[in-house]
Length: 141
Image (cartoon, rainbow, N blue to C red; front, side):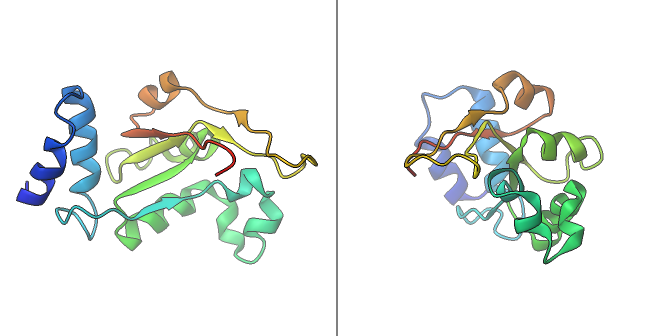
């Protein structure tokens, strides 16, 4: 563990050992591992903006496992996605990249001024899938 990661973890001394381990897992993974910097691949566009709009230009993007492999090949620190995407590849890619479960998503079909987010995952599901963290967008973002 690098001094930089130790320093960052020291800022969270009131958090549980499990939380510190998950932060360390993300900070020490990927090409930037140990530098204190993070690059996370977020893939929720298929949910929020419709799969055709997001993935039609790159048809392999329809396969959730493609995004796991993309994050791994790119050397990302973590991969963040909604429940269905994480569920589709969590077992196959277990231990290969830290996961972040996105717990809520906006809906592009909603026509109002403010987004109308839906809860699409839970902390229990994140734990079951071995996720290192959860993501929750507070609108307006």
